[in-house]
Length: 334
Image (tube, rainbow, N blue to C red; front, side, top):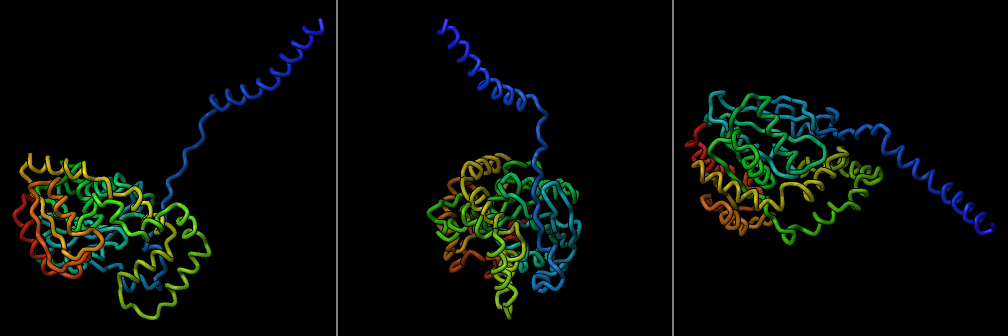
């Protein structure tokens, strides 16, 4: 009899422990789902006050034909240069510097009769899918059914991914300048890997650190290097800038795109398109040897070598780059 009472007591105790847990599990499984998290869209350069030094470096009318458009992933600043009936080409910039990197290239191509599209990406979470989707949305918005594509640095990785994923939106010409996309971790600087780490992003996103960056940016007395100054301003004043750079380094179109480049090679050969590579021999960011690696993935690609050229060839050798691009794009179908 005592044994039976003990068993009953144990069953009651077990029930009291288990039933609440089962009830909670059933509740969470059957309750209405929580609202999904909203997409975080951070402010861009256009949000800064008009007395910011950024407007002196990168004014609203830096290029002619500028406008803004808002997409699901954020607000995009873009420009259309050159005659409306000119051959179409979109210029895609790299990682940390916006479309100002094309300042000596875009106007010259427009002057030679090309219809040139430039744009700045929004401030949000960055990966390859975001970059190519944003460009596809922009082309749809401005009414371009097809365009030739030119990308520099990380913009080369974006260009290759765009050609691979949206071939129906691309003409028969793709130009890659000092292109990222297949960079190996060993060739990435320790500084960039360290700064893009999650722990450093917590630190650099903190209020004290950003106040320190603002102090440095606001107390700079001169603008000796406009592009470096623009990077400092974005880093100091735009809360999404450093995380965006870090996200691009970790998840964006800098690495792991060898299958994409190989696919571009197959598709280009099949439809009779052409690919141009332009590389400097002194490039320390994406070393010159990567040109040969890209050619193994895109065997039909033509390589133009700029002796002594570094990674910023659009700034250091604009005349040469314009001549090569104009000649290459001038025989395209668009």
